[in-house]
Length: 392
Image 1 (cartoon, helix red, strand yellow):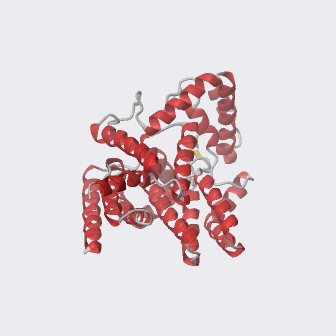
Image 2: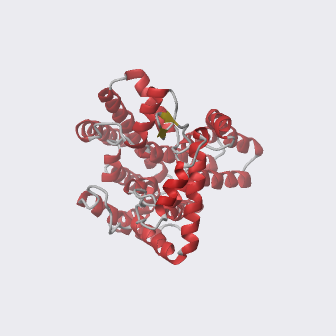
Image 3: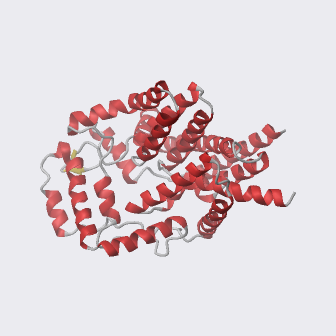
C-alpha cells in the first residue's frame, strides 16, 4: 500500500510536469545554452563568444548541459522536438530525485513525514516550474540529491556500490557547476578520515575518468587544467559599481571595453577575459569594502528570504514569494528542533550554510534557491516530525 501511494504521487507529478512544460515551457533555446549549441552546429566549435564570425573555444560555461542539448539536436534536429524531449527528460530526472529525497528523509524521520515532505518538494512551485525551462538547474539539484543519497548510504554502511554511484554523480556535478568541488572535497576528507584507501581511490578515480576528456581538451587549448574559468566574471558581475543582489553585467565601462578589445589571442580569449574581470572585481572590493560587504549581507538575506529589488519577470508572483518565505520560516524552525547529536544532520546544516555563503559572494538568481532546497527540506522535516508527534 505504501509503495502504491508513493508511485501514485510520482506518476501524477511526472504527467503534470510534462503537460505543464509542453504548454508553458520555454519556446526557444536562447541565452548561453542556445548560443553555444548554435555556434557548435554553425562552426563546429564548442564556444560562446564570437568575434568577426570567429567563435572562441568555451571556457566560460560548464559543459555538461550544453553537451546534453547538442546530443539531442544531433538526434532530432527540430527545435520543437528537442524542447519537448528535454522537458520529458527533465521531468523524469526531477521526479526520480523526489523519490531519492524521500529515501534520504526516511533515514532520519518517519514514513509519514518523509512522504509528506516528498510531496511538498515535488510540487514546490520553483521545483515544479524549473522542469519547463532550458536550464541546467534541474540536473544540478537532482544529481545533488542522488549524490547525497549514495554518499550518506556509503558512510552509514561501507557498500562499494554506494561509493561507485556517488562518485559517478560527482563527476557529472563537476561538469555542471564548479562550486560542487567544495562539497566534493568535504566528503573526500570524510572518506579519508573514516574509511580505507580503496574507497578513496574509487571516489577520486571515477569522477576523474568522467571529466578527463574535457580536462584534456582544455589543457590542449588553454594550457591549463580546469573545467571552467568564470570565477572572475561572476565575481565582477556581483561586485561592480552598479551591481545589485542579482548582479549587473549589462554596462561595461570604457576601460573594460578597451581592455576586452585588446585581447588578440582568440583561442585563449575566455581564459584571458576571466582574468581581466577577476582583476576588476578585486579592485572594486579593495576600493569599497564596506559597500560590498553590505551588498553581501543583502545577498544572503535575498537568498534566504526575499530580494526586495528584483528585476526578474514574475519574481513577486505570490506562487514564488509565499513558498520562498514559508520555506525559510520552516527551515529556521527545523534548525531549532532537529537532533543536534546526529552527525549527518549537522553535516547537512553545514552544507546549507556553506552554500548560502558561497553563492552570496557572487550574485543571487531566483533559480539558485533550488540548489539548496533539498537541504532545507531535510530541516523542515525535523519541524514536521515534531508536529506529527504532537498531534498523535
